[in-house]
Length: 195
Image 1 (cartoon, helix red, strand yellow):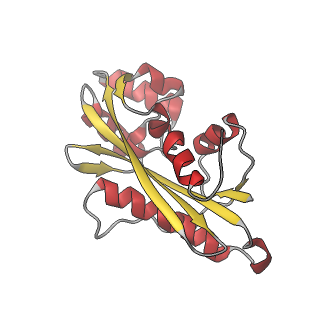
Image 2 (cartoon, rainbow, N blue to C red):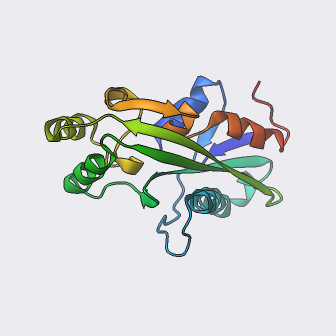
């Protein structure tokens, strides 16, 4: 069965490659603006579903048979506020300054969408993360090296991010952007076994 990842994230792509999954990548064109949804669980589940659905709707007729689409969305939550992707250097600096020395939560929603019959399954994962206390100079150097403009909360746990993440409680892959264990459970609902 054809599997499609509805994401341009190189991190999600790498996770799937590392477990030997064969898949295609088709970027979703869904506008991720959030207006009505207040809690992070519903937000990431809704966005992951809409990303998968938008790719399904844009497939040509011949591509629609026997395909599963994986949609995912990750947000960082600090003090009940969702932190999205930074819009500028100052925005990234401000987010990292707020996260400095504190625990926060990372939520990722995942959706597996069957293109053939429109059935889907959605779930989410939560991981607690503590960022070390950062000086303004460390924040500046991190932003210059990592360029975190495509990352929720202005950081990634891997690469240079491993130098600022002090502790985690929960799924590491969730913080990277794709909780593989939850994904494998969803895929099994559609007859796909990863192991």
